[in-house]
Length: 240
Image (tube, rainbow, N blue to C red; front, side, top):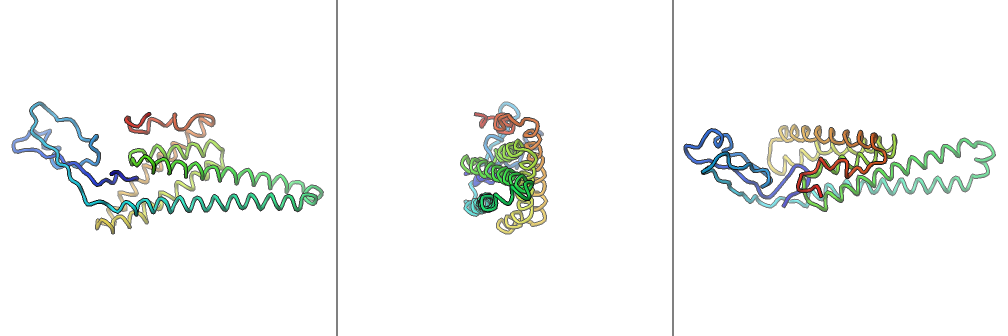
């Protein structure tokens, strides 16, 4: 069973060589693979190397899903707050319409601009929620960068406000992954905390590059299909 982010799996494959193996085979000895598709072909005919399949103890995947669901729940709470704020602004405009029209007409324009920006923020959040849900649905951690890039791309297509919202959401997620989640994972798996954090920081830097790339593509292609444009970020067997 493959879980999101980081390619965590209950199964791993270990390459083993035999005595007297060639140099190429010796280089592969003990190498671990998380996906069976990543295992290279045998280096030469009559190769006597073999692959050991190790079924690890099932991870507490629910904990990983709970963290993602919590993040989605926070995003949906912001969504509710934004919708409530939009509703309040409309009520205020209706109540003081005459005053706004007579004395401070520019306030009306400001309020309308605020509503437009709030709607863009809301739509950007919904893009992120939708892409997270799609990633959860396919249960394939290899596709995480595709969905991260696509969410950033779709939000950036909405303009400066959408781009800024996407950057804030992405930065917050990567900060959480490289700090809180890294510590929790190290404690749970009894790994070295500093090493785990360093690995997470490296992963986050790669994700941030993907997020930036998605936003740039969204700005360059404001009417394009982000899902189609970014298909090259999917594994070949997922490019449906």
